[in-house]
Image (cartoon, rainbow, N blue to C red; front, side, top):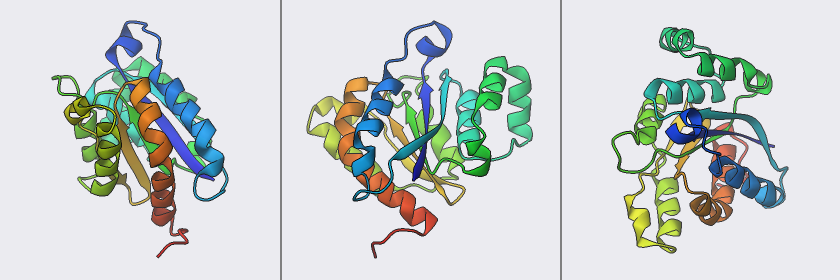
Length: 200
């Protein structure tokens, strides 16, 4: 069983009430592909979903929670100041406390605009430990569909030694293009981090 968390990063959805179309697209692909992931292993289990604005502390709190970490002083301070993050922190299913997400997919905030800071926050949470090959593979897949993919700053990193985080662009179409090919690699990486991979 591969546990996954989905964190949508969007000012318009979190603050302006725009309907989130990106995370349903991601969850749809996970549902369709799960049973084939890893050569017939159990499907992905979604352990939590978050919706946050393009704010550094909101994104960090969501990633911190998805990885199963206890709130540090910085996170506690933010939770006292942000009622929406406090609510989502406490609504997350108990599975995250006993079994942190082995894969966290962020959706949105990977562009070139000033408020697109998801990659920077992910790398901070991962202490700079990147999984270059996964990001390169995702970019190669995306470039097959459009050269504009080059303007996306997708990154992958390892948080706490056991959770893989990957940043998806906020487009539902791009998620549907990338994830079907990428999920088997993410499953293998997840198994490797847990020490359960059958590959050398």
